[in-house]
Image (cartoon, rainbow, N blue to C red; front, side, top):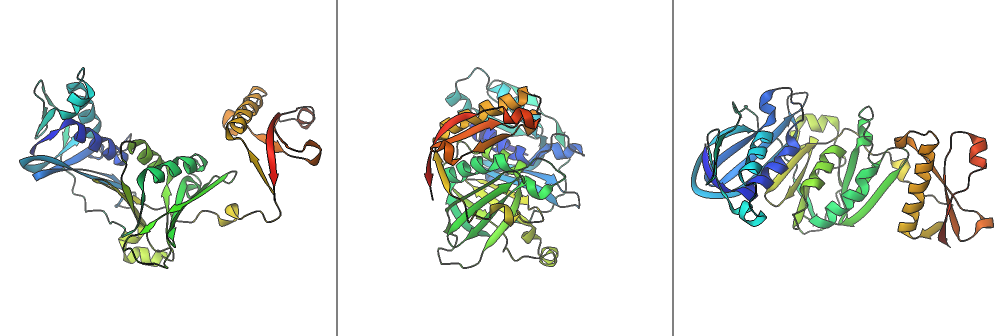
Length: 349
């Protein structure tokens, strides 16, 4: 393979491709990215193999290259990234991004250096299925809402359904949901149907949270729309066996396409059920966060494991206009003698 591209776009493509590269791959070639040069386009692709022979994450990024490129090579993603960063070290950001990079087989060259990179035999991998696009959303807002929901998604792999974020497109909206059984987060944002016509079908998929966390980290320079591909929410196991594209969800942003195998299940609906007989309290966000941090720190100081430190929120008629945030201590007699931070609150029905 030989191609010439600018260092900046190549570095961003490698960063996105890292989403599909395992930290400790079972086979060496799975640590690689496949670079395909054709004319004036270079495609960077990575596939993370799935247990049953498919791929559970696939990333493809297309970037412009000088005309005349041709061929295909599979190079170690981490080493290629480190070499590329080192080759433009000490250059200003703008100059580094413009630096021409020549890729020739397993060699990377800039005007200053030429370095070999670990290469692998290109694996024979079938193109992953891609879910049909059903809607587009504003990219920055989508990633912002993901950052609000993701902290609630569990990280315990023994409960895989709780490690995901549910995406559901229906009636011109995208709903994001996540829960770890103790907490729940839900947000709704506008979504434009892909064909610009009214669509009464609902589409849904539960996407692994670790995939979406990496997507958010890699998306900061992107300001365009995000196209979302999801299967119909009525899809059954039998349907999935007959049509592989029904077992994946797809995100397209800019030149990148990410395909992730969806988790088998749904977010527990009971967790998100509204409380019919409850009222509302309006508080200053900064004051509440400050009080919670203090209470958790005290609970930890009293022996609670940091990840399980709990706080109690109390509002009573005797303490009107105030929400008390106190550490939940292990011994009941200690809890009874503990007071918490008072946060001003406005009551509403």
